[in-house]
Image (spheres, rainbow, N blue to C red):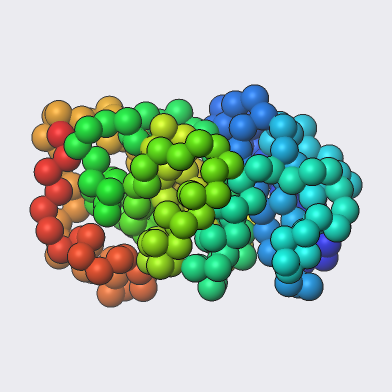
Length: 225
């Protein structure tokens, strides 16, 4: 995808996410790797609903600003994901309501923040880790991400929001949406003893669709709720 088309795609997806209430105000950010080894990222204090393609922050491979507005303060977070997820070409970070709410519940397993509720959650988002709270922009969050060693493509930051990587921008956006909808399902069904996918059903998805799940996160019962 050309630089111009990539800029337009970031703005188009950003507006779609914003207009559907998935990240309010000037919250959330998107980054995409570019062919020259650098990346495009949304600017700081910019609403995803009103992005200007020409003002997106262009960073070189070392993370230095080359052109555009000042980048999001979450650069350390994005950098750590790219360092540990070699296949990642795009990252979406939102402040979506249901995913944030999920992070505040006491029973959430940091290794598997959501049980295997639907096939498309596993197929799109894989499995989701929960990290402790860090101040937005705190470089320490990068160390926490590195501690996951690239095992997860989707991560929840406690009291903050989801961070999702994909091999394309579209894949990262769709996975983030699937994560939000699954969090919504969990909150709707919490304490109602719903049926989750069985280990055999999860293994069937792994076998037939090549779903990648971190070792040890899908071979034990989920006792959420």
